[in-house]
Length: 496
Image 1 (cartoon, rainbow, N blue to C red):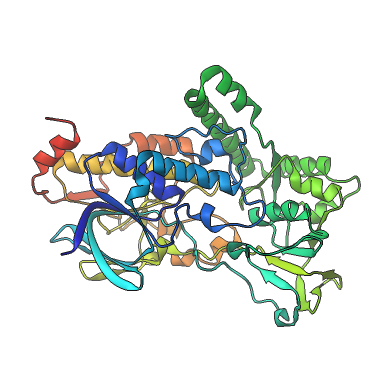
Image 2: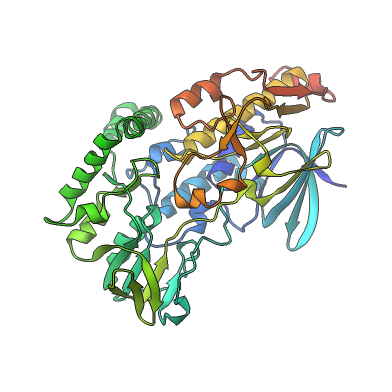
């Protein structure tokens, strides 16, 4: 007999643990399970083990709304974040609901039965489970491999090549010459961390990235905790950081030249006198056309000032036996090359979807509020902000899902399906110019030309829309009459 749960959550990372907490808190009597393809919870924060791995957002916004981040460090390392996720799961008993090694492969919706039949593999054995609502928290990139371009002559290189997504625990880079290819968040994290013991680390980039130095410890948050206590201080700090990041983003969009000058001047102050800032730290694009990189206490700039690291802005001609030859004619000697060249995106965890026998191709769908698919019943997914913390959006999506499920309980509905207006035009779901997005955006659902078919990128606005907006907004079609709806609704609303 096939097992059935009310809600099936896919993915036990930051989003999945948060989703489970929201579901469990809102509906204590609702059955749910959490499937995780890997053998550990934590998602990104368990997968990535490279030196210095840390948050690329402050922890007062990357942390959950319901669980204050109380450590002193506002920019935290990977192990601290992983411990935060694990402790959240353990304290709520969510860890007991996780089924590891359960890789979801497909899901088929039946309108007649008003449920999903979800196919998965465990220990190489295929099986199925059914659920009323399918909640995908699997992120948006492949966990089994990262993106590495084809480099001419790579087979000639006699040193070691490593991708950050699969960092060898035994890698010894002490006293070695290291080249890190890339200029994004991973690269600017790796360079100062490896420079602590490597002979020298060079960050090789095709083009510069905007980099902002931020304090590791948020002094205002520390003082607020002393005066207001952990929970109230966390709320105030969270909103303070949301407003500051929103201001920087909005100014970058509306006054790009002013912000370009602002970031350039910050770099000049932290680099050695006479440093070629315009070659290495002056991007050709406007601020926030790609994600802004944060460096705690300016550690990248400090490693450059101290001569332990350097930046080369050039293109690779080919690998040689002992390094990398550049198009400019320069040669970078290397014992180890780290390809911090990005992620390979994966839509909806690579799960094959069908609705009443009809195959659903993600690029042929339109995303409702950036979290449900047009024409697909009882399914939600989480994609976080590109201009702010992932968890800010993940929390709001979970709150909306809970509101939607409660609304369905109250009215006895068994199905909720966003239904696109045929007059809207489509656009890419992620309006973002990062290379890893541009390479794969055609695999993802589309966004629409107007609300509610856009992926919102403004947290304050999304608070109003997702936390307080109408559920019956004329876009979601509700159907069905759940068996024993009155009985189940009374139980979940606390009616005895």
